[in-house]
Each structure stands twice: as C-alpha cells, then as structure tokens.
Length: 309
Image (cartoon, rainbow, N blue to C red; front, side, top):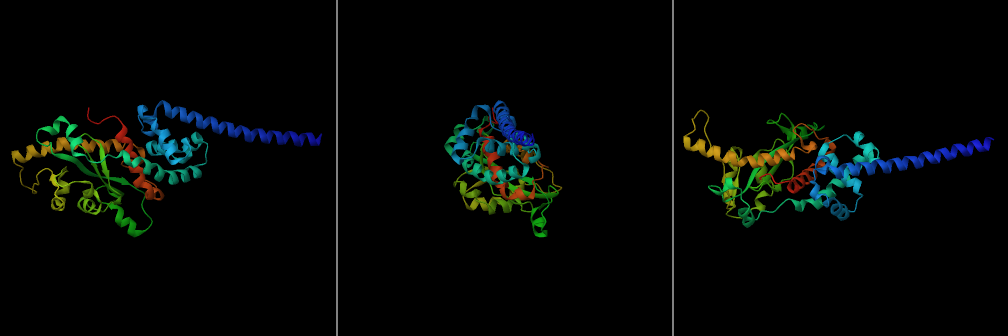
C-alpha cells in the first residue's frame, strides 16, 4: 500500500510538469495569434507587412516568439512581469532575451532606414514643397528620450537636459519631405547642444554637395559647418529679442514651419512606441541598447502607412 502511494505521488508530479509545458506552449500560441490579428497595435508592424517577421526571424535565427516579445516590449513597454505569462518565461530570462536580441534585430532592420536619393525625392515630393522648396532633400530635428538618473555624478551632468528638466539621451533625426526616416544618429548626453550634435555625428557624410536641409531656428550655428560641405541650410530667419518681425520674415517663418511639421509628425509616430514616450524613463541598464531600440522603431515607422496622403 505504501509503495502504491509513492508511485501515485510520482505520477502526479510528472503529470504536473507535463501540464506546465502544455500550458506554456498554449500561452505562447495564444500570444502569437493575438499579435497576428493586430500586429500594428502590439508590435508596430502593419498587417500587410507581417510576413517580414518570418524573414527577420530566419535571418537572425531566433525563435519567433522571442522576436515578437522584443518588438512587443518596445511597442507597449509592458513590464517583464506582465509579459512573463504571455511568453511563458521568467521576468529575469525575458530581460536577458531582450538585451541579447535587440542588437541582432536592429542589425537586420537598419536597411529599412532609407538612403537619400535626390532623383527619387523629387519624384515623390509632396505638393506643399513643389513651389518654393523643391530642392529640399531632408528635414532635421532632435528628440530626447528620458532615462533613469545615472548613479555616477559625471553621467548625471552629461545627460542632464535643461530643456526637458530630466536626464536624457539626445538624437538627431532626419526625414525626407514625404516623411521617411533617412537618418538617426547615435545617442548623445542630453547636455549636448543641437549644433554640437550635428557636428559630432556622421550626418553630413550621408549628404551630397548641393543638397538643401530644412531645420528650425535652433540649428542657426550649424549653417557655416554645413556650408563647408556644400550643403545649404533652409531655416526661419533669426529675429533679435525685442525686435518686431517684418511681414516678409513672418511669412517665411510660417512657410518653413508648415513644412517642418513633417519631422514633428515622424517624431510623434516614434513616440507611439511606449519605450520612447516623453516620460517613459528608460531603465539605466537598457541605455546601452537604446540606439538599437531607436533604429528598430525608425525602421518600423518606415514600413507603416505613409505620413503624407
């Protein structure tokens, strides 16, 4: 009788383990089905482009649910505890998967960020640019991502942004007139000025002599730097404090502002990825892969529906 009881207990244990594996598989299967129904909502991929998931998975040779998890985390920024049930893995293991796989995914998705092609830009130039600004190749701006306060005083000083009143990582972003991201810089400390950022990154190397770049007044001091490379900066006229703007200057400012809105719309679409929201506050241990997270988000918005209808 005692032996039978022991055997029965062992059988129950085996059944429980098997049950757990089946439940985990079922959870993953249900999560994949849920994402397949609404990929734009859960991972930022339009349903018509969902086939790219299998291509990327095969290219970097990782399980499909690992790839979906990484994109899901970037898109919705749910905690690892919340995601652990969906993907049947412990929060600590999910964190390791995220840190390991994001750079691999970014390496495959980087080519989704378009190269500047003057011929193609002119063919697809939005109507608003065609009258006076048909020579503009791209529009630039900076965006800042808030991060947790670093433990080292030096890093605190380098990442402090007076504009955001927080510790941030700053990026230069450029888009074509029809709203496709053509450049994203590596991250710099939030203390870096717009001018210093343009001069420190390799943005100018992506341009050709004779191109025109549109920007706001904050890039005033970049003008001479770009001119040396044969690039013309198109921006609103500078106005001294206390001096009233002339009618011509006001008109010009309004014209440039109405066209610069496209880069603002690109940034707004980037902010739809919850890890990149204005006050998402990235955990400091993920700052080292923040460049790759931004690359993935930029690649995904380039395959979404066009910003300009």
